Amino acid sequence: MKRKHQKTLELIFSRPVSSNIQWRDIEALLVELGAEISEREGARVGVRLFGDRRVFHRPHPSPNTDKGAVAAIREWLNSNGVKP
Image 1 (cartoon, rainbow, N blue to C red):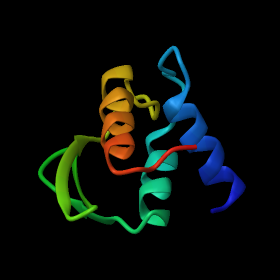
Image 2: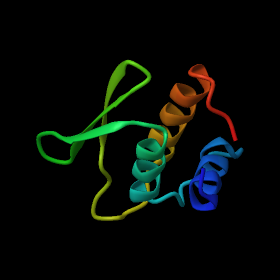
Image 3: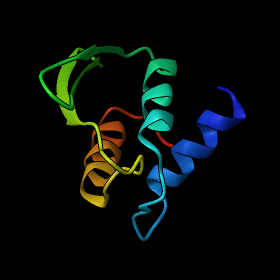
């Protein structure tokens, strides 16, 4: 895993939850882990990973992901054995 993806993973698992993670960095990490990303209606993004499908809301106008989404992604990654 590239250092940039490792840093993003560390930010996702940091406590307290970070609100400075850009969505594009999270998306790049998920692709690195083998995810298939699909555009949905509006700002929704479909992510297929670990044999599971999730839908996330791409943040706008700010590129930073909100704390609730970061916590949900952390829980999803953790439940599938992905840790920093």
